[in-house]
Length: 113
Length: 113
Image (tube, rainbow over all chains, first blue to last red; front, side):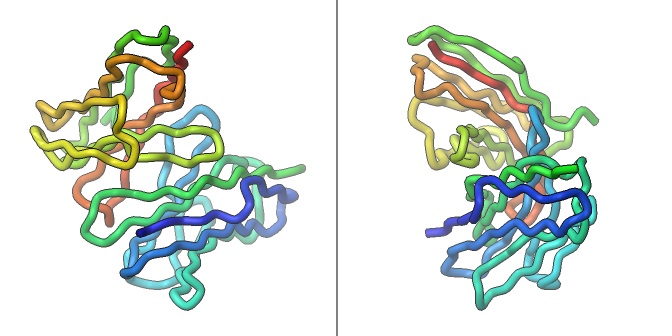
């Protein structure tokens, strides 16, 4: 069965510091992987996705993630945090050719001035 | 395009009451989904539809029903509301299967007391 684990339910960084949000997946077949962002009182918005092309995926707002099969990881990074990055971030996995996303439990990112 | 719209934004129900959460999309997407979001739990799939007239259960379907009579609309019905159904409900849609982005509505916050 597929699953997603996000390490750290709360992460706090200083403005300008590196953002690293961790996601590990479990899947018996090559998965599709996604990062979504949720700003307060809003729906989810896609940040980036991995669908078996390049292993380093660039998304919106300066975020990127690297698919590492050997580590079953898909960590999200941003070189320099901005106050506007404060939000909850969800990693999700789906099997190829299915239409169901399995979400992690989310990581709430706080950015300190 | 309005994207995915949901009504109402907020609702308080008494135990045993019924209600329908409305969801509509104007992107001509075939796939539509209902999720619930509980604190610290991520999003769980309730029901999904791959096209008009076709629906299927997700991970947590008990206590809910859906119908899909048109491509645009995908209402979620709660027949006998229970406190365990207190949650934030998100509707989403996608063009086809999981390799494509799911577009989320703004959510409906439901409280059952």
